[in-house]
Image 1 (tube, helix red, strand yellow):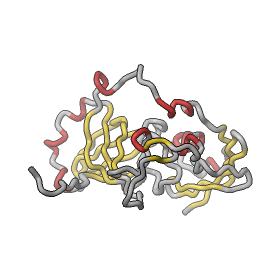
Image 2: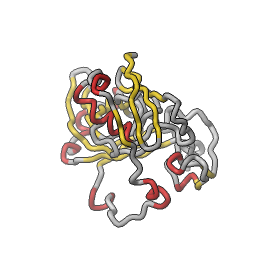
Image 3: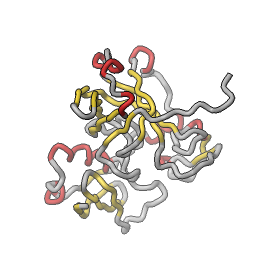
Amino acid sequence: MLDRERVIRPIATIHTDLPTKFGLPRQSGLVEGLEAKIVFLPPYRDPVAFRGLEGYSHLWLIWGFSENSRDDWAATVKPPRLGGNRRMGVFATRSPYRPNALGLSSVRLAAIRQEEKLGPVLYVAGADLMDGTPIYDVKPYLPYTDSHPEASSGFAGEVLDYRLEVEFPPALLEKIPEGKRQPLMELLAQDPRPAYLHDPARRYGFNYLRFDVRFTVDGNRLTVVDVVDL
């Protein structure tokens, strides 16, 4: 029996178009167009370790909440999608403030490419992770055991259909590379604001690619007011 805690170490880092927490999708798979790549650390770049992975369409990522600045945890949290004013048990939520700051995401495997300096690199879609997030493990998604269409959604089901109407002036949208526009529109439609902020006069903003996307929200309408180069 071990007389000390076993240390887990990152095996890879994910690179995405979202350099900060603000603006991230609230769950994986919600913005399918978000592309990312997973670069493995040198000890884990052996191509043999990836043999057979190409046969799967989706993966589970086990990762760390690297921007979680708290060392403690709380038995209850306030889920943002419930307005930030209703407490639920931490184990009934996906809050980052947990006994162990680990996250779990399902992503689509788009490609595996052998790159000269990086070894096997995984290209994935639909990740809800910030750029630079450490990955602790990668496992195949098995639809015959991992998919449960009849499953209930608990209190999270109360807000499944919540979306904003997005008004993005064409002159501002043209600043965004064409292939990156639709994922950005999806991110905005999901309302990236903190749940407790609902001031229609306030300007919000988050970083996407090399841009600061600034917007206001009035009722159910989000309006982009500026796109600033960083």
